[in-house]
Image 1 (spheres, rainbow, N blue to C red):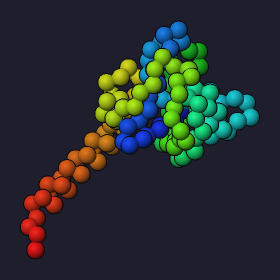
Image 2 (image 1 turned 45 degrees about the vertical axis):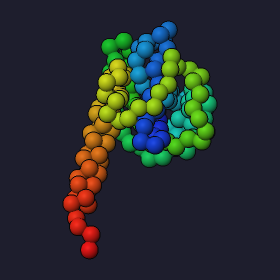
Image 3 (image 1 turned 120 degrees about the vertical axis):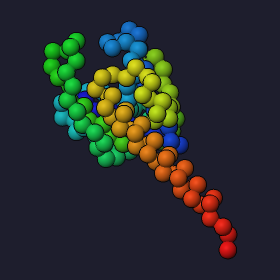
Image 4 (image 1 turned 30 degrees about the horizontal axis):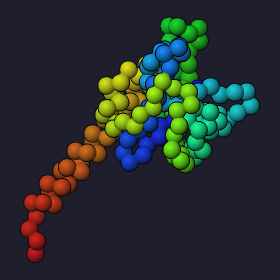
Length: 145
């Protein structure tokens, strides 16, 4: 399985699974199954065309995990990539799509395999924000010469 972490203006794209799907109404990153003969990157490019109607440039691998869902017979190996897209995503396969600040992702009911990455994204973003605020306080405290 492959998934895309797509960031635009500091927000990250998340998708809510359809109510008729397995794991109904849970949130996930767009992506899906790797078909025979596909590389991980090729599979992710195809899935993004099928699910959100965009062309994608697949970046570095961000995170990889193996998760066993009780509802499935086999564990799922999932590879998350940083992805940039051309155009605006269209909802072709989900209940809904949304752009969220990293800390907002933690409040959504994400698939279990995605949750550790979500915590990492939120933690990294909060560290960057603390650093930026501290830099701003230091620069405001300096006197012009």
